[in-house]
Image 1 (cartoon, rainbow, N blue to C red):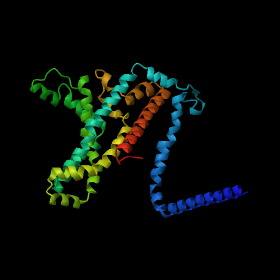
Image 2: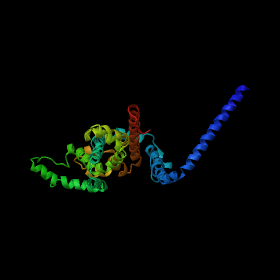
Image 3: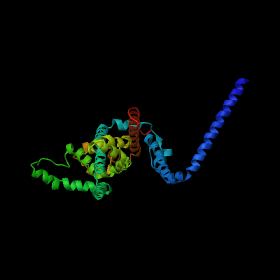
Image 4: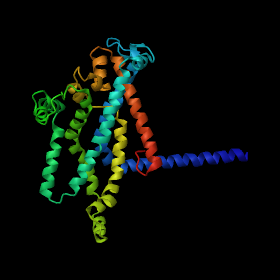
Length: 321
């Protein structure tokens, strides 16, 4: 009898706790209703274009027929994944994707940080704004134009090739040499988007308390010492978060850039998953195979971002979740 009474009391307490939490949640939602209303278009956009299309993942496990649709296509299980992993080009495509991504991670990712630190040291406001405008502009130029400029400058009659000939380097074909392809792709990425990437870091730098620099100057710290002791530590949180997000998209590269810059002479180093899916999956009508490759890329990205975030939690106070 006492046991039943005790259980009843516990049940009542739990139900009261649930009602209390529900009431607090409703009050919270109502008090912040305008903020949620402001965020509603973004939430609907994400749901519509990021989550609803995930229904198409089922194609990776089917022999998809456009006339039958996803709901009536034949199930084949992991057949397309087995085909991918046993394809003779799989390891070549995986190597190219990882190498180009790592080059971007090592060379391109630090570039906006360095540029932001240098711009932060510029004291002339007009001069600083002029530099920012100039380095932002390439971001708004399409990859078609960037690649066309590269081809024009580096073909056999281009300015870069003529300059190399002038200093005695005559036995190189810049656009046809496999050894140079990855470097050219990385330099293109840095030129186009490094300036635009400084926006986030400059915003983080603007939030640093100026009194910290004043105190450092009073203590006799020079500009370099101020940067090491104040500026760089203040940026570390932003750097770690963006690096973690970058790890999640390490398998995604610019399709436009690599598709345009690729040619039969450098195909062994230019073929990545994005171009491979287009050529083998889309152009040949193998939509299920293309979906399987896309799902594989997403799973690799998920593992990388979870693993990187786990390491960040163990080693620092900056992490995503």
